[in-house]
Length: 295
Image 1 (cartoon, rainbow, N blue to C red):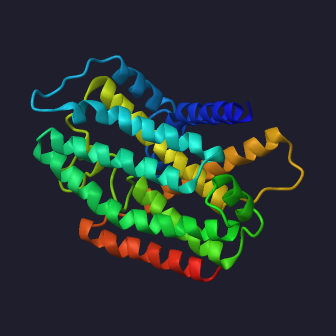
Image 2 (spheres, rainbow, N blue to C red; image 1 turned 90 degrees about the vertical axis):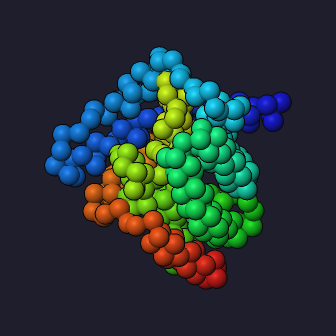
């Protein structure tokens, strides 16, 4: 009975994250527009766009196979599963789910047979090879302190000494990973379709209608999962004696602060060349190693 209750709670949290993910994406868009002295879209515009896409039919190329047809659902299932694991899951299960969903989306870009899709898929795998080892080392910094890879235990251990030097190094490394994993400047540009710069957008050019909407919703959910990981593990501090409601509002405030910080990073930097990304991720890797060694 206890296990069933845990599963229901995890699924409830995952559903809440999926429903809130477009709002966080909209806040990032609005914050970015304000920082650039533009009016920008409405905060709810991402919901309108998703609703419009989910109402449309899907056009499928006759050259595609079952991989292309199932990839959006696998990508969304990976993001939903990762969101469900945030409360009581295991670190490695979460990372493997995200890696598997990324693999199938990249595979579908090759299955379509288009030049842009293959380019985007190859670039995505190129960046994933750089990001995933650094992400693992960064997370192991917290896991080593907790003595467990359970996310609940890692969160409790992070709250004990949130301002130690290893955690500061790990937090900066994870922030770099957050920028890379969510496809934001300086690694990727989510607002362009220029062939020389696009990565994630190139992979989904052949999708339309409901499947494209599902991919966008999964990407927004994955973004919120990484933001929550950052706030829970690397910004765990909160005032003592807060009620459950105030604790939730405190978490929301930290998520919004991280979203605005992402918009500020995008507005203050330029898109770097693809072959400079290894150096950028190398910086994150060095910080993660220093954090792990300094435990």
